[in-house]
Image (cartoon, rainbow, N blue to C red; front, top):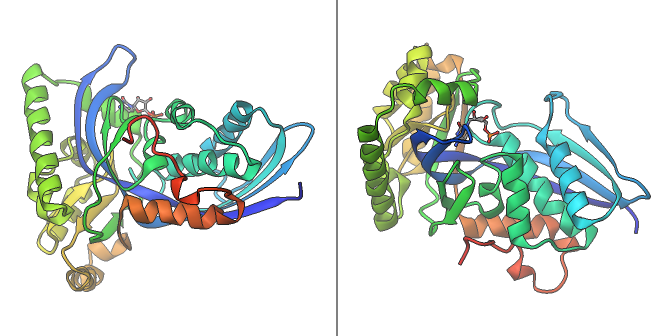
Length: 325
Ligand code: C5P
């Protein structure tokens, strides 16, 4: 087999809603979230060639320490029982440490691409387990679109597609350490808080499913990290406040520091962008325009970027796994 080469877009995610419940005995926090893929993405070029022993390289100008892509490649080759030379190049656009799942998405991209490049299938359940072993957000990227995330976030259930609404993402150049944000939030949580949070989450999901619009459901949304993270980084609260005047809804994503504004139309977004660029405080931050990406588009994108190497029923690829029925 000659070298097989594919160019992959690895999309970011946002959390449309995020509630943190109790700390579990394994140290993770039980959570309830709604994940959503967005059109902002990194580019990965991956080359695969069978070889007597496995050799994996990663060309990443940012030299991200302990990059999950290498671990993902090793683990999936082992599971496929093949040895190969795998060369990867990563071009980053997704802000790092911004709550946008960039590293998790990159790892999931490798999990999806390598079996196809190797011409072998892995059971979707197996892939999902490997993904969960790499990180709590990785399994979501195997299904994309809009999805419920339960457990520590690794248990994902697809929701129906919602409108592909336009968004602005503000990256204040801060990196919030996920573990620390959880610890700060976990202190002082009571049983009463948990039931309030579960109820709030139920209302959000109902509003989202009924209206099929994140802009429409935004008055029900919450991110439990906001008060904790805003205490350390008051400028994020300021950004949210200013954007709230122009957008249908504004939320921090994940444990921060990305702030996401959702709009009902591209015109509304462009108006907000102009105001943003003229604001002395706001224009110091990186501003990215994108839109929500539904599961149909996400899956189509993945089939397209690996089409050359897919055989048989390409429509059936990629299988949704144990929660996909
Ligand atoms: O799973 P992942 O490696 O992404 O998690 C990073 C850290 O975030 C964990 O070590 C843990 O401290 C915290 N975390 C948590 N509860 C979750 C997810 C992550 O406490 N549901």
